[in-house]
Image (cartoon, rainbow, N blue to C red; front, side, top):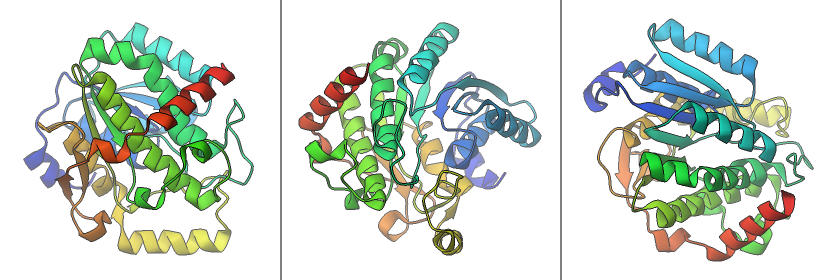
Length: 299
């Protein structure tokens, strides 16, 4: 595990804390789980694949011998799976200290959809988390939970019309940008709903050298994958440095909707710093209304 000097200097002991991380069997979620476990926290890995989650848990235990890790299954592209996860989480854990909305996909093959028939990128990255937050709202209030929504440095390129955001009318590339901008709108919605009881924050990893764009269901052309891997490796953070932004967001005092980002220009890479987020810039009542109508129509 890298960046132990930074962790020891900037992150206090998290002994006794419980954090839920969606999509924690790989990439940013995996490295974050390892870092939080190193600082003594108990981790709930919310993952789609049991086998990959077990493999990830074993890797963490090799680095952090006494890591406290539980696995709960959840496929964020399935409302049924989300409901099952919420039932298991809330019955098993009376209290959690933090919930990290991390799971997502980048560039699926054209035409792929969620279990409910929603375009896969927006469905997995935004609609699924929105539905998850609806089901967990009272639980978050009871726990006074700290919530971190992970977004992306590409979200400025994801400007959308609310009437189009939930459809497949954008290109596969812009769909991801739109989904991450919608995630910030979701964070603002959670802030408006929960600000008297919960602290809602944002973080993004910069240009993270992970496999998010290169999975088996990725629609990225082979040559583009090879070039992108090299570019991200040379120009971006590795996944351990990328997850430090979220690690810091979970462990220090902060104002609501503070966004933890890499400190170098354009927030591409580097160690974390904090920037302000204006809720008025991202609040979107029409989007919320359409999202809830879409969810209701699929239940």
